[in-house]
Length: 581
Image (cartoon, rainbow, N blue to C red; front, side, top):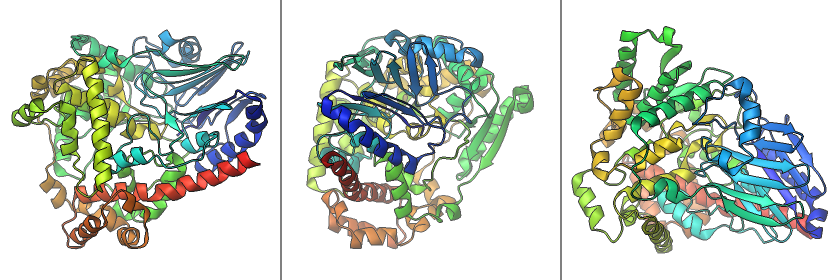
Protein backbone atom coordinates (compact mmCIF):
# COMPACT_ATOMS: atom_id res chain seq x y z
CA UNK A 1 0.00 0.00 0.00
CA UNK A 2 1.31 3.41 -0.97
CA UNK A 3 0.90 5.67 2.06
CA UNK A 4 -1.10 8.78 1.18
CA UNK A 5 -1.88 10.93 4.20
CA UNK A 6 -2.84 14.52 4.92
CA UNK A 7 -3.56 16.59 8.03
CA UNK A 8 -4.97 20.04 8.62
CA UNK A 9 -4.46 21.62 12.07
CA UNK A 10 -7.49 23.88 12.55
CA UNK A 11 -6.97 25.22 16.08
CA UNK A 12 -4.22 26.72 18.17
CA UNK A 13 -3.90 23.47 20.09
CA UNK A 14 -3.83 21.54 16.83
CA UNK A 15 -0.98 23.66 15.51
CA UNK A 16 1.02 23.07 18.71
CA UNK A 17 0.44 19.30 18.49
CA UNK A 18 0.93 18.92 14.75
CA UNK A 19 4.69 18.28 14.73
CA UNK A 20 4.90 15.63 17.49
CA UNK A 21 1.83 13.80 16.19
CA UNK A 22 3.11 13.98 12.64
CA UNK A 23 6.51 12.63 13.61
CA UNK A 24 4.87 9.70 15.44
CA UNK A 25 2.66 8.97 12.42
CA UNK A 26 5.68 8.93 10.14
CA UNK A 27 7.47 6.49 12.44
CA UNK A 28 4.40 4.25 12.38
CA UNK A 29 4.30 4.35 8.58
CA UNK A 30 7.96 3.40 8.40
CA UNK A 31 7.37 0.34 10.58
CA UNK A 32 4.80 -1.02 8.11
CA UNK A 33 5.90 0.23 4.69
CA UNK A 34 8.84 1.44 2.66
CA UNK A 35 9.03 5.21 3.25
CA UNK A 36 12.55 5.80 1.90
CA UNK A 37 11.23 7.66 -1.16
CA UNK A 38 8.51 9.52 0.70
CA UNK A 39 8.04 13.20 0.01
CA UNK A 40 6.49 15.60 2.52
CA UNK A 41 4.96 19.06 2.23
CA UNK A 42 4.54 20.58 5.70
CA UNK A 43 3.69 23.99 7.12
CA UNK A 44 2.64 25.05 10.60
CA UNK A 45 -0.99 24.25 9.68
CA UNK A 46 -0.88 21.55 6.99
CA UNK A 47 1.03 18.39 6.21
CA UNK A 48 0.91 15.87 3.37
CA UNK A 49 3.02 12.78 2.76
CA UNK A 50 3.12 10.32 -0.11
CA UNK A 51 5.38 7.27 0.10
CA UNK A 52 6.02 7.17 -3.68
CA UNK A 53 6.47 3.42 -3.31
CA UNK A 54 4.92 2.55 -6.69
CA UNK A 55 7.50 4.14 -8.99
CA UNK A 56 8.83 0.72 -10.04
CA UNK A 57 5.30 -0.56 -10.77
CA UNK A 58 3.60 2.39 -12.48
CA UNK A 59 5.10 4.76 -15.05
CA UNK A 60 3.10 7.55 -13.49
CA UNK A 61 3.97 9.56 -10.36
CA UNK A 62 1.85 9.62 -7.21
CA UNK A 63 3.20 13.07 -6.26
CA UNK A 64 2.73 15.98 -8.65
CA UNK A 65 3.38 19.70 -8.23
CA UNK A 66 2.68 22.85 -10.21
CA UNK A 67 2.27 26.54 -9.51
CA UNK A 68 -1.08 25.88 -7.80
CA UNK A 69 0.12 23.33 -5.28
CA UNK A 70 0.61 19.62 -4.61
CA UNK A 71 -1.44 16.62 -5.77
CA UNK A 72 -0.81 13.33 -3.92
CA UNK A 73 -2.36 10.00 -4.98
CA UNK A 74 -2.49 6.55 -3.41
CA UNK A 75 -2.30 4.96 -6.88
CA UNK A 76 -2.22 6.43 -10.39
CA UNK A 77 -5.85 6.46 -11.61
CA UNK A 78 -6.85 6.03 -15.24
CA UNK A 79 -9.65 7.43 -17.33
CA UNK A 80 -12.47 5.22 -18.56
CA UNK A 81 -13.78 7.89 -20.95
CA UNK A 82 -10.65 9.39 -22.57
CA UNK A 83 -7.57 7.86 -24.18
CA UNK A 84 -4.65 9.04 -22.01
CA UNK A 85 -1.18 7.74 -22.81
CA UNK A 86 1.82 7.81 -20.51
CA UNK A 87 3.42 11.02 -21.88
CA UNK A 88 0.25 13.04 -21.29
CA UNK A 89 -0.75 11.42 -18.01
CA UNK A 90 0.71 13.95 -15.52
CA UNK A 91 -0.84 16.94 -17.27
CA UNK A 92 -4.15 15.06 -17.49
CA UNK A 93 -4.04 14.20 -13.77
CA UNK A 94 -3.35 17.78 -12.67
CA UNK A 95 -6.13 19.11 -14.88
CA UNK A 96 -8.69 16.41 -14.05
CA UNK A 97 -8.36 15.25 -10.46
CA UNK A 98 -8.72 18.62 -8.78
CA UNK A 99 -12.35 19.06 -9.84
CA UNK A 100 -15.47 17.12 -8.96
CA UNK A 101 -16.46 16.82 -12.59
CA UNK A 102 -13.05 15.41 -13.51
CA UNK A 103 -13.15 12.87 -10.68
CA UNK A 104 -16.41 11.45 -12.05
CA UNK A 105 -14.63 10.22 -15.19
CA UNK A 106 -11.84 8.39 -13.35
CA UNK A 107 -11.69 4.65 -12.82
CA UNK A 108 -12.22 3.76 -9.11
CA UNK A 109 -9.35 2.48 -6.97
CA UNK A 110 -7.42 5.52 -5.72
CA UNK A 111 -7.51 8.34 -3.15
CA UNK A 112 -6.35 11.92 -3.63
CA UNK A 113 -5.07 14.88 -1.64
CA UNK A 114 -4.77 18.37 -3.06
CA UNK A 115 -2.87 21.02 -1.07
CA UNK A 116 -3.04 24.50 -2.55
CA UNK A 117 -0.38 27.16 -2.12
CA UNK A 118 -2.81 29.32 -0.12
CA UNK A 119 -3.37 26.58 2.47
CA UNK A 120 -6.63 25.26 1.07
CA UNK A 121 -6.87 21.50 1.06
CA UNK A 122 -9.08 18.72 -0.32
CA UNK A 123 -8.94 15.00 0.42
CA UNK A 124 -11.24 12.54 -1.36
CA UNK A 125 -12.26 9.00 -2.25
CA UNK A 126 -12.96 7.44 -5.63
CA UNK A 127 -16.52 7.38 -6.92
CA UNK A 128 -17.38 4.01 -5.31
CA UNK A 129 -15.14 4.30 -2.25
CA UNK A 130 -13.21 1.19 -3.27
CA UNK A 131 -9.95 2.68 -2.00
CA UNK A 132 -9.03 2.87 1.69
CA UNK A 133 -9.45 6.35 3.12
CA UNK A 134 -10.13 7.07 6.79
CA UNK A 135 -10.85 10.27 8.67
CA UNK A 136 -10.58 11.76 12.13
CA UNK A 137 -12.31 15.12 12.46
CA UNK A 138 -12.45 17.11 15.68
CA UNK A 139 -11.95 20.65 16.98
CA UNK A 140 -8.19 20.45 16.43
CA UNK A 141 -7.57 18.34 13.34
CA UNK A 142 -8.87 16.92 10.13
CA UNK A 143 -6.68 13.91 9.31
CA UNK A 144 -7.32 11.70 6.28
CA UNK A 145 -5.29 8.79 4.95
CA UNK A 146 -5.15 5.15 4.00
CA UNK A 147 -3.43 3.95 7.18
CA UNK A 148 -5.82 3.74 10.13
CA UNK A 149 -3.13 3.80 12.80
CA UNK A 150 -1.62 7.02 11.47
CA UNK A 151 -5.04 8.68 11.31
CA UNK A 152 -5.95 7.50 14.82
CA UNK A 153 -3.12 9.46 16.44
CA UNK A 154 -4.98 12.69 15.66
CA UNK A 155 -8.09 11.62 17.57
CA UNK A 156 -8.84 13.74 20.63
CA UNK A 157 -10.91 10.86 22.02
CA UNK A 158 -9.69 7.69 23.65
CA UNK A 159 -9.20 4.90 21.09
CA UNK A 160 -11.56 1.95 21.52
CA UNK A 161 -12.51 -1.04 19.39
CA UNK A 162 -15.68 -0.36 17.41
CA UNK A 163 -17.75 -3.16 18.91
CA UNK A 164 -20.68 -2.84 16.51
CA UNK A 165 -18.36 -3.00 13.51
CA UNK A 166 -16.44 -5.93 14.96
CA UNK A 167 -19.73 -7.71 15.67
CA UNK A 168 -20.69 -7.53 12.01
CA UNK A 169 -17.19 -8.51 10.87
CA UNK A 170 -17.23 -11.59 13.10
CA UNK A 171 -20.41 -12.83 11.44
CA UNK A 172 -20.20 -11.76 7.79
CA UNK A 173 -16.44 -11.20 7.34
CA UNK A 174 -16.31 -7.48 6.49
CA UNK A 175 -16.68 -4.14 8.26
CA UNK A 176 -20.08 -2.45 7.86
CA UNK A 177 -20.98 0.98 6.52
CA UNK A 178 -18.14 3.44 7.26
CA UNK A 179 -17.10 1.83 10.55
CA UNK A 180 -13.44 1.05 11.12
CA UNK A 181 -11.81 -1.11 13.80
CA UNK A 182 -11.44 2.07 15.89
CA UNK A 183 -14.59 3.84 17.06
CA UNK A 184 -13.32 7.41 16.53
CA UNK A 185 -11.90 6.67 13.06
CA UNK A 186 -14.37 6.54 10.19
CA UNK A 187 -14.01 5.53 6.59
CA UNK A 188 -14.77 8.15 3.94
CA UNK A 189 -17.83 7.34 1.90
CA UNK A 190 -18.07 6.85 -1.87
CA UNK A 191 -17.22 10.02 -3.82
CA UNK A 192 -16.78 11.92 -0.54
CA UNK A 193 -14.62 15.05 -0.41
CA UNK A 194 -13.34 16.76 2.74
CA UNK A 195 -12.42 20.39 2.12
CA UNK A 196 -10.47 22.71 4.43
CA UNK A 197 -10.40 26.36 3.48
CA UNK A 198 -7.51 28.74 3.82
CA UNK A 199 -9.10 30.03 7.05
CA UNK A 200 -9.54 26.49 8.48
CA UNK A 201 -13.23 26.20 7.68
CA UNK A 202 -14.21 22.54 7.11
CA UNK A 203 -16.88 21.12 4.82
CA UNK A 204 -17.77 17.75 3.35
CA UNK A 205 -19.56 16.95 0.10
CA UNK A 206 -20.03 14.23 -2.49
CA UNK A 207 -19.34 14.55 -6.20
CA UNK A 208 -21.63 11.65 -7.12
CA UNK A 209 -24.56 9.85 -5.54
CA UNK A 210 -25.26 6.17 -5.11
CA UNK A 211 -28.68 6.70 -6.72
CA UNK A 212 -26.92 7.52 -10.00
CA UNK A 213 -25.39 4.06 -10.23
CA UNK A 214 -27.70 1.87 -8.17
CA UNK A 215 -31.12 3.49 -8.38
CA UNK A 216 -33.93 1.39 -9.84
CA UNK A 217 -35.28 1.98 -13.35
CA UNK A 218 -32.34 3.30 -15.36
CA UNK A 219 -31.85 1.09 -18.46
CA UNK A 220 -28.09 1.64 -18.29
CA UNK A 221 -25.62 2.02 -21.17
CA UNK A 222 -25.67 -0.36 -24.11
CA UNK A 223 -23.25 -3.27 -23.92
CA UNK A 224 -21.25 -2.15 -26.95
CA UNK A 225 -20.41 1.08 -25.10
CA UNK A 226 -19.51 -0.90 -21.99
CA UNK A 227 -17.21 -3.21 -23.95
CA UNK A 228 -15.48 -0.22 -25.56
CA UNK A 229 -15.01 1.47 -22.17
CA UNK A 230 -13.55 -1.69 -20.60
CA UNK A 231 -11.08 -1.98 -23.47
CA UNK A 232 -10.19 1.70 -23.02
CA UNK A 233 -9.63 1.19 -19.27
CA UNK A 234 -7.24 -1.69 -19.96
CA UNK A 235 -5.44 0.25 -22.66
CA UNK A 236 -4.97 3.30 -20.40
CA UNK A 237 -3.80 1.15 -17.49
CA UNK A 238 -1.50 -0.88 -19.70
CA UNK A 239 0.17 2.28 -20.98
CA UNK A 240 1.33 3.08 -17.44
CA UNK A 241 2.88 -0.27 -16.50
CA UNK A 242 6.61 -0.60 -15.85
CA UNK A 243 6.44 -4.39 -16.30
CA UNK A 244 4.05 -6.61 -18.19
CA UNK A 245 1.07 -7.14 -15.85
CA UNK A 246 -0.46 -10.40 -14.66
CA UNK A 247 -4.05 -11.09 -15.72
CA UNK A 248 -5.82 -13.84 -13.84
CA UNK A 249 -7.65 -16.41 -15.97
CA UNK A 250 -9.54 -19.13 -14.16
CA UNK A 251 -12.39 -21.36 -15.21
CA UNK A 252 -14.95 -18.86 -13.91
CA UNK A 253 -16.92 -16.15 -15.60
CA UNK A 254 -15.49 -12.96 -14.11
CA UNK A 255 -11.81 -13.52 -14.78
CA UNK A 256 -12.74 -14.55 -18.33
CA UNK A 257 -14.45 -11.20 -18.88
CA UNK A 258 -11.51 -9.32 -17.35
CA UNK A 259 -8.99 -11.22 -19.48
CA UNK A 260 -11.13 -10.66 -22.57
CA UNK A 261 -11.18 -6.91 -21.91
CA UNK A 262 -7.42 -6.87 -21.44
CA UNK A 263 -6.88 -8.76 -24.68
CA UNK A 264 -9.26 -6.40 -26.50
CA UNK A 265 -7.29 -3.44 -25.14
CA UNK A 266 -4.27 -4.69 -27.08
CA UNK A 267 -1.68 -4.45 -24.30
CA UNK A 268 0.88 -7.16 -23.45
CA UNK A 269 0.06 -9.39 -20.50
CA UNK A 270 0.87 -12.58 -18.63
CA UNK A 271 -2.24 -14.74 -18.36
CA UNK A 272 -2.01 -16.68 -15.11
CA UNK A 273 -4.10 -19.64 -13.90
CA UNK A 274 -4.01 -21.03 -10.37
CA UNK A 275 -4.12 -24.75 -11.01
CA UNK A 276 -5.02 -26.06 -7.56
CA UNK A 277 -8.19 -27.52 -9.09
CA UNK A 278 -7.98 -29.44 -12.36
CA UNK A 279 -11.24 -27.96 -13.64
CA UNK A 280 -9.73 -24.46 -13.55
CA UNK A 281 -6.73 -25.61 -15.55
CA UNK A 282 -8.79 -27.44 -18.15
CA UNK A 283 -11.07 -24.52 -18.94
CA UNK A 284 -8.29 -21.91 -18.96
CA UNK A 285 -6.18 -24.09 -21.26
CA UNK A 286 -9.15 -24.44 -23.61
CA UNK A 287 -9.61 -20.67 -23.74
CA UNK A 288 -5.94 -20.09 -24.49
CA UNK A 289 -6.11 -22.71 -27.21
CA UNK A 290 -9.02 -20.84 -28.84
CA UNK A 291 -6.87 -17.70 -28.96
CA UNK A 292 -3.92 -19.57 -30.39
CA UNK A 293 -6.06 -21.06 -33.14
CA UNK A 294 -6.60 -17.61 -34.64
CA UNK A 295 -3.40 -15.79 -33.66
CA UNK A 296 -0.48 -16.91 -31.55
CA UNK A 297 -0.05 -15.64 -28.01
CA UNK A 298 3.40 -14.35 -28.95
CA UNK A 299 1.94 -12.21 -31.72
CA UNK A 300 -0.57 -10.84 -29.22
CA UNK A 301 2.13 -10.00 -26.68
CA UNK A 302 0.71 -12.60 -24.28
CA UNK A 303 1.99 -15.59 -22.34
CA UNK A 304 0.16 -18.17 -20.22
CA UNK A 305 1.36 -19.98 -17.14
CA UNK A 306 -0.26 -22.35 -14.65
CA UNK A 307 0.82 -22.11 -11.03
CA UNK A 308 -0.11 -23.93 -7.81
CA UNK A 309 -0.15 -22.80 -4.21
CA UNK A 310 2.83 -23.85 -2.13
CA UNK A 311 1.62 -24.83 1.37
CA UNK A 312 5.21 -25.25 2.58
CA UNK A 313 5.96 -21.58 1.88
CA UNK A 314 2.81 -20.52 3.72
CA UNK A 315 3.80 -22.71 6.67
CA UNK A 316 6.99 -20.68 7.24
CA UNK A 317 4.75 -17.99 8.80
CA UNK A 318 2.49 -18.81 11.75
CA UNK A 319 -1.00 -17.36 11.99
CA UNK A 320 0.24 -15.21 14.86
CA UNK A 321 2.97 -13.75 12.65
CA UNK A 322 0.53 -13.16 9.79
CA UNK A 323 -1.88 -11.41 12.14
CA UNK A 324 0.80 -9.11 13.57
CA UNK A 325 1.79 -8.10 10.03
CA UNK A 326 -1.84 -7.61 8.99
CA UNK A 327 -2.55 -5.40 12.00
CA UNK A 328 0.63 -3.40 11.43
CA UNK A 329 -0.27 -2.69 7.81
CA UNK A 330 -4.08 -2.55 7.89
CA UNK A 331 -5.08 -2.24 11.57
CA UNK A 332 -7.69 -4.99 11.31
CA UNK A 333 -9.63 -3.67 8.30
CA UNK A 334 -8.90 -6.48 5.86
CA UNK A 335 -10.62 -9.62 4.67
CA UNK A 336 -9.89 -12.28 7.34
CA UNK A 337 -9.17 -14.79 4.57
CA UNK A 338 -5.85 -13.02 4.03
CA UNK A 339 -4.58 -14.95 7.04
CA UNK A 340 -4.49 -18.06 4.87
CA UNK A 341 -1.29 -16.77 3.23
CA UNK A 342 1.85 -14.97 4.39
CA UNK A 343 1.49 -11.22 4.95
CA UNK A 344 4.81 -9.57 4.26
CA UNK A 345 6.13 -6.06 3.81
CA UNK A 346 5.39 -5.05 0.20
CA UNK A 347 8.43 -5.26 -2.07
CA UNK A 348 9.77 -2.13 -3.70
CA UNK A 349 9.03 -3.49 -7.16
CA UNK A 350 5.83 -5.37 -7.98
CA UNK A 351 3.93 -6.44 -11.06
CA UNK A 352 0.42 -5.10 -11.51
CA UNK A 353 -2.31 -7.73 -11.27
CA UNK A 354 -5.74 -7.66 -12.87
CA UNK A 355 -8.44 -10.10 -11.73
CA UNK A 356 -12.19 -10.60 -12.00
CA UNK A 357 -13.18 -8.76 -8.84
CA UNK A 358 -16.62 -7.09 -8.72
CA UNK A 359 -17.97 -9.35 -11.43
CA UNK A 360 -20.43 -10.58 -8.79
CA UNK A 361 -22.81 -7.78 -9.77
CA UNK A 362 -23.58 -9.79 -12.94
CA UNK A 363 -24.37 -12.89 -10.86
CA UNK A 364 -27.51 -14.00 -9.01
CA UNK A 365 -25.89 -13.27 -5.65
CA UNK A 366 -27.62 -15.12 -2.82
CA UNK A 367 -30.41 -16.25 -5.21
CA UNK A 368 -28.67 -18.93 -7.26
CA UNK A 369 -31.79 -20.56 -8.68
CA UNK A 370 -35.45 -19.82 -9.30
CA UNK A 371 -36.58 -21.46 -6.06
CA UNK A 372 -34.31 -19.29 -3.92
CA UNK A 373 -35.26 -16.22 -5.97
CA UNK A 374 -38.90 -16.87 -5.09
CA UNK A 375 -37.99 -17.16 -1.41
CA UNK A 376 -36.01 -13.92 -1.56
CA UNK A 377 -38.91 -12.08 -3.17
CA UNK A 378 -41.25 -13.31 -0.44
CA UNK A 379 -39.14 -11.72 2.32
CA UNK A 380 -39.87 -8.33 3.85
CA UNK A 381 -36.87 -7.13 1.84
CA UNK A 382 -34.36 -9.19 -0.21
CA UNK A 383 -31.34 -7.85 1.73
CA UNK A 384 -32.57 -9.67 4.83
CA UNK A 385 -31.56 -12.87 3.00
CA UNK A 386 -27.96 -12.08 4.03
CA UNK A 387 -28.58 -13.14 7.63
CA UNK A 388 -29.26 -16.67 6.32
CA UNK A 389 -26.39 -16.68 3.82
CA UNK A 390 -24.00 -15.67 6.64
CA UNK A 391 -25.74 -17.41 9.52
CA UNK A 392 -24.23 -16.70 13.00
CA UNK A 393 -23.42 -20.36 13.46
CA UNK A 394 -20.65 -19.86 16.04
CA UNK A 395 -21.30 -16.30 17.26
CA UNK A 396 -22.76 -15.00 20.51
CA UNK A 397 -26.30 -13.61 20.48
CA UNK A 398 -25.24 -9.95 20.50
CA UNK A 399 -23.39 -10.40 17.21
CA UNK A 400 -26.54 -11.65 15.46
CA UNK A 401 -28.48 -8.68 16.83
CA UNK A 402 -25.88 -6.18 15.59
CA UNK A 403 -25.77 -7.79 12.15
CA UNK A 404 -29.55 -7.78 11.91
CA UNK A 405 -29.54 -4.05 12.71
CA UNK A 406 -26.96 -3.48 9.98
CA UNK A 407 -29.05 -5.42 7.44
CA UNK A 408 -32.23 -3.55 8.35
CA UNK A 409 -30.37 -0.28 7.81
CA UNK A 410 -29.25 -1.49 4.38
CA UNK A 411 -32.79 -2.63 3.53
CA UNK A 412 -34.06 0.85 4.34
CA UNK A 413 -31.37 2.39 2.13
CA UNK A 414 -32.37 0.08 -0.74
CA UNK A 415 -36.00 1.09 -0.38
CA UNK A 416 -34.90 4.71 -0.63
CA UNK A 417 -33.32 4.16 -4.06
CA UNK A 418 -36.16 1.97 -5.30
CA UNK A 419 -34.28 -1.35 -5.08
CA UNK A 420 -36.98 -3.66 -3.71
CA UNK A 421 -36.28 -6.72 -5.87
CA UNK A 422 -33.38 -9.19 -5.72
CA UNK A 423 -31.05 -6.76 -7.50
CA UNK A 424 -30.74 -5.11 -4.08
CA UNK A 425 -28.55 -8.07 -3.15
CA UNK A 426 -26.16 -7.16 -5.97
CA UNK A 427 -26.00 -3.58 -4.75
CA UNK A 428 -25.30 -4.93 -1.26
CA UNK A 429 -22.60 -7.25 -2.56
CA UNK A 430 -20.74 -4.40 -4.22
CA UNK A 431 -21.22 -1.43 -1.90
CA UNK A 432 -21.49 -3.15 1.48
CA UNK A 433 -19.32 -6.24 1.12
CA UNK A 434 -16.94 -5.79 -1.78
CA UNK A 435 -16.18 -2.15 -1.03
CA UNK A 436 -14.83 -3.20 2.37
CA UNK A 437 -13.53 -6.65 1.50
CA UNK A 438 -11.56 -6.50 -1.74
CA UNK A 439 -7.82 -7.04 -1.51
CA UNK A 440 -6.86 -4.56 -4.21
CA UNK A 441 -7.24 -1.74 -1.67
CA UNK A 442 -4.49 -3.32 0.44
CA UNK A 443 -1.87 -2.72 -2.27
CA UNK A 444 -1.06 -0.20 -4.96
CA UNK A 445 -0.49 -2.92 -7.50
CA UNK A 446 -4.00 -4.11 -8.38
CA UNK A 447 -6.47 -2.81 -10.91
CA UNK A 448 -10.16 -3.66 -10.49
CA UNK A 449 -11.29 -3.50 -14.10
CA UNK A 450 -14.90 -4.43 -13.33
CA UNK A 451 -15.28 -1.36 -11.12
CA UNK A 452 -15.58 0.60 -14.38
CA UNK A 453 -18.66 2.81 -13.74
CA UNK A 454 -20.21 2.12 -17.16
CA UNK A 455 -19.92 -1.61 -16.53
CA UNK A 456 -21.44 -1.19 -13.06
CA UNK A 457 -24.40 0.80 -14.32
CA UNK A 458 -25.08 -1.76 -17.05
CA UNK A 459 -24.80 -4.71 -14.66
CA UNK A 460 -27.16 -3.07 -12.18
CA UNK A 461 -29.79 -2.66 -14.91
CA UNK A 462 -30.03 -6.45 -15.37
CA UNK A 463 -33.09 -8.25 -14.10
CA UNK A 464 -32.63 -11.09 -11.61
CA UNK A 465 -33.82 -13.49 -14.32
CA UNK A 466 -31.08 -12.27 -16.66
CA UNK A 467 -28.52 -12.93 -13.95
CA UNK A 468 -29.82 -16.46 -13.51
CA UNK A 469 -29.26 -16.95 -17.25
CA UNK A 470 -25.69 -15.48 -17.04
CA UNK A 471 -26.75 -13.11 -19.79
CA UNK A 472 -24.22 -10.31 -19.44
CA UNK A 473 -21.15 -12.52 -19.01
CA UNK A 474 -21.73 -14.19 -22.33
CA UNK A 475 -22.67 -11.02 -24.16
CA UNK A 476 -19.63 -9.10 -22.94
CA UNK A 477 -17.12 -11.88 -23.61
CA UNK A 478 -18.57 -12.35 -27.10
CA UNK A 479 -18.09 -8.67 -27.89
CA UNK A 480 -14.54 -8.58 -26.55
CA UNK A 481 -13.14 -11.97 -27.66
CA UNK A 482 -15.55 -13.72 -30.06
CA UNK A 483 -13.42 -16.88 -30.04
CA UNK A 484 -14.51 -17.57 -26.45
CA UNK A 485 -18.21 -17.69 -27.20
CA UNK A 486 -19.76 -21.00 -26.20
CA UNK A 487 -16.83 -22.21 -24.07
CA UNK A 488 -17.88 -23.90 -20.83
CA UNK A 489 -17.32 -22.37 -17.40
CA UNK A 490 -16.09 -24.15 -14.30
CA UNK A 491 -17.44 -23.67 -10.78
CA UNK A 492 -15.84 -25.75 -8.05
CA UNK A 493 -18.04 -27.82 -5.77
CA UNK A 494 -17.35 -28.53 -2.08
CA UNK A 495 -16.29 -32.00 -3.17
CA UNK A 496 -13.67 -30.56 -5.53
CA UNK A 497 -12.08 -28.65 -2.66
CA UNK A 498 -12.15 -31.68 -0.38
CA UNK A 499 -10.50 -33.91 -3.00
CA UNK A 500 -7.68 -31.45 -3.73
CA UNK A 501 -4.56 -32.25 -1.72
CA UNK A 502 -3.21 -28.74 -2.33
CA UNK A 503 -6.38 -27.10 -1.00
CA UNK A 504 -6.48 -29.33 2.06
CA UNK A 505 -2.77 -28.91 2.80
CA UNK A 506 -3.26 -25.13 2.61
CA UNK A 507 -5.88 -24.99 5.37
CA UNK A 508 -4.77 -22.69 8.19
CA UNK A 509 -4.68 -25.51 10.74
CA UNK A 510 -2.24 -27.32 8.45
CA UNK A 511 0.03 -24.37 7.63
CA UNK A 512 0.04 -23.06 11.22
CA UNK A 513 -0.37 -26.11 13.47
CA UNK A 514 -1.21 -25.31 17.08
CA UNK A 515 -2.43 -21.74 16.45
CA UNK A 516 -6.10 -22.70 16.69
CA UNK A 517 -5.51 -24.46 20.00
CA UNK A 518 -3.42 -21.61 21.43
CA UNK A 519 -6.11 -19.03 20.66
CA UNK A 520 -9.04 -21.10 21.91
CA UNK A 521 -7.30 -22.28 25.07
CA UNK A 522 -5.06 -19.35 26.06
CA UNK A 523 -6.79 -16.19 24.81
CA UNK A 524 -9.94 -14.48 26.01
CA UNK A 525 -10.73 -11.62 23.61
CA UNK A 526 -12.40 -13.79 20.95
CA UNK A 527 -15.06 -14.81 23.47
CA UNK A 528 -16.64 -11.36 23.13
CA UNK A 529 -17.74 -12.41 19.64
CA UNK A 530 -17.79 -16.21 19.55
CA UNK A 531 -19.52 -18.77 21.74
CA UNK A 532 -16.88 -20.76 23.62
CA UNK A 533 -18.67 -24.11 23.58
CA UNK A 534 -19.45 -23.87 19.88
CA UNK A 535 -15.85 -22.94 19.03
CA UNK A 536 -14.51 -25.87 21.03
CA UNK A 537 -16.88 -28.10 19.06
CA UNK A 538 -15.49 -26.58 15.86
CA UNK A 539 -12.00 -27.43 17.08
CA UNK A 540 -13.02 -31.07 17.51
CA UNK A 541 -14.49 -31.16 13.99
CA UNK A 542 -11.20 -29.88 12.59
CA UNK A 543 -9.18 -32.35 14.64
CA UNK A 544 -11.36 -35.23 13.43
CA UNK A 545 -10.49 -34.42 9.82
CA UNK A 546 -13.82 -32.81 8.92
CA UNK A 547 -12.54 -29.26 8.72
CA UNK A 548 -13.89 -27.37 5.69
CA UNK A 549 -14.14 -23.85 4.32
CA UNK A 550 -16.76 -22.80 6.89
CA UNK A 551 -14.42 -23.77 9.73
CA UNK A 552 -11.48 -21.96 8.15
CA UNK A 553 -13.55 -18.84 7.57
CA UNK A 554 -14.84 -18.83 11.16
CA UNK A 555 -11.36 -19.27 12.61
CA UNK A 556 -9.94 -16.50 10.40
CA UNK A 557 -12.57 -14.06 11.67
CA UNK A 558 -11.93 -15.16 15.24
CA UNK A 559 -8.18 -14.57 14.88
CA UNK A 560 -8.80 -11.02 13.63
CA UNK A 561 -11.21 -9.91 16.36
CA UNK A 562 -9.07 -11.66 18.98
CA UNK A 563 -6.17 -9.41 18.02
CA UNK A 564 -8.10 -6.13 17.93
CA UNK A 565 -8.31 -5.16 21.64
CA UNK A 566 -4.56 -5.41 22.27
CA UNK A 567 -3.72 -3.70 18.96
CA UNK A 568 -6.08 -0.78 19.54
CA UNK A 569 -4.91 -0.59 23.14
CA UNK A 570 -1.31 -0.21 21.98
CA UNK A 571 -2.31 2.57 19.58
CA UNK A 572 -4.15 4.31 22.41
CA UNK A 573 -1.02 4.16 24.55
CA UNK A 574 0.93 6.00 21.85
CA UNK A 575 -1.85 8.52 21.23
CA UNK A 576 -2.44 9.28 24.91
CA UNK A 577 1.26 9.80 25.58
CA UNK A 578 1.47 12.33 22.76
CA UNK A 579 -1.67 14.25 23.68
CA UNK A 580 -0.91 14.27 27.43
CA UNK A 581 2.59 15.53 26.77
